[in-house]
Image (cartoon, helix red, strand yellow):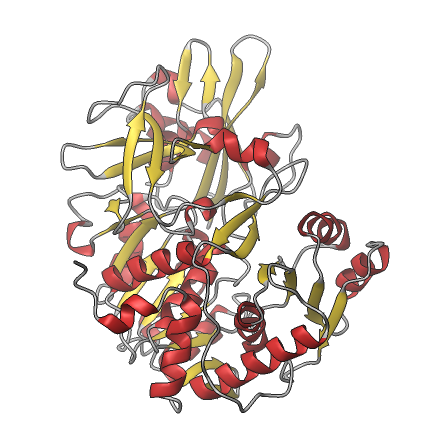
Length: 509
């Protein structure tokens, strides 16, 4: 028999958790957006208002609602309102262009589109769409719809029904929309809440977009806990982000490696009052041990959670207990609750501890599949296992160490090289801010190893110094033949490096 309280057994979706909080603690602040503040009762009333609006526009159960909004209160209202109306929320990258929006809108067959008034690329895509979805244009700092003052009871949710479609970044060809169920979202959120120990008095500063799985997870985990989500100023002004951390007495902050690299580079963290910070989380690509150590030196008090996940696994697969960070530096930790994994060799056998293979995972957070794409789904979901495409190994204690994507493997001569092996060594050098390593075509060796380096101040003979540093620490075949100094690395919306772009001839990031 389950040890969960009876109330928890009836809450089978994120929606139901938020509804309960709106009933029990209606005055608790749910979100802060600049000068705007909204409590849980208001958030719920606005979500109900938007749900009513969607139904009046003819939305049926299972219909898709595309949400083209930056991080603002209305983006959360639109998501929860869509679920209240029985629809499927499809948050889209608001920074994309019309040529991106058009295939996404067609692929999900959006029946309703929400966008910010004056978003020219959204308007262009709608003009070219051909079909005629219902439209809601949101004015600046204005509520999405009038609030609804009726009962705060949510509809009964089918946990297995699709709730969210997230289009993965960096794909080519036909769009790949990851379809996540209400059960997927709740399993992910409950796992994160458990290891972070989230409580109603927590306050997170959100810099990650809600249309990205990590950003969506930050939003939902805190709202279901009765905690507050503070929307951050633009990261282009890092000092304003730090000021908001102190002013709002923020207890948590989540970022990708480039987020932390930017803050460490452009602001003196010691100049700000960050005494309220309880935890930091990192995901969205591997963070080098060197950057991890820099971050811990600059912010020694907050607990740092290194994490690993995929959109196909509703954001989170593993976490590294902060108490073991020094002992397991470079690891992404152990599976989150409910998730199991194994490392598979190319011949289909289980890899022994210490040996590399593809990471396979299964659990209640694994996606329903790719929306309207059974072939792509079958390629990664087999016999209940999600084939992640990530290469890694387990140590004797069962902690996972990743070595990059299977498709990122560099084949140089008779050797195979994981880019992260080289990146971690180069990142040890004090003048290096970021580095990405790829293989570029070569007529003799098949591929040559090329390193793209972002440096604070490039010292004399920097290229020779990097190669000498690598020679002292790496096998000869892992030493980069080519080194390019760039101002920035090309990244996806989720902060991951676009390696494919770096591999293009005469790449200009």
